Length: 118
Image 1 (cartoon, helix red, strand yellow):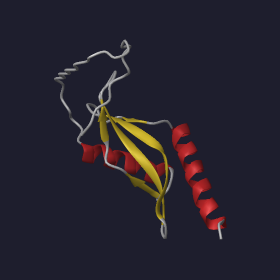
Image 2 (cartoon, rainbow, N blue to C red; image 1 turned 90 degrees about the vertical axis):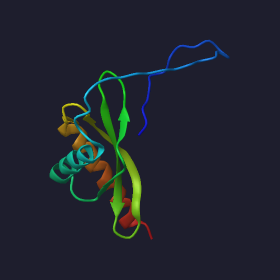
Image 3 (cartoon, rainbow, N blue to C red; image 1 turned 60 degrees about the vertical axis):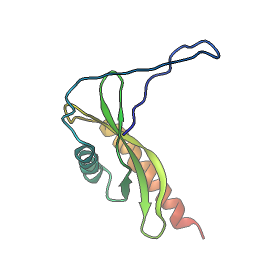
Image 4 (tube, rainbow, N blue to C red; image 1 turned 90 degrees about the horizontal axis):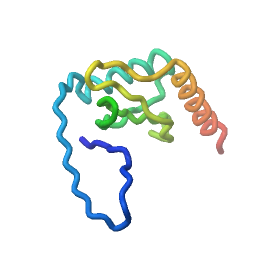
């Protein structure tokens, strides 16, 4: 598991010590976050997707970032077309229908280009 922290304004050649302590319930596991994203993709985009392991991100809220790949039966994972975030406390999938529509269009474009290549 990894986390990301927004860039901090630091002087050049500064010595930095970072210590972060967060105490909050993590109600949604990596596995559940991945299942939730997979369900949204299946419902709105189709079946030509593979998901990487979710990564925990710390920011305004704790979220699981789930990278999404377009897959092809013969070529496997062919292109990463983005990611979907899941609130790690509530389980809310943080994606709009428009974002899902754009992912589907991107996936179709990738798969079409593969079909047209010699």
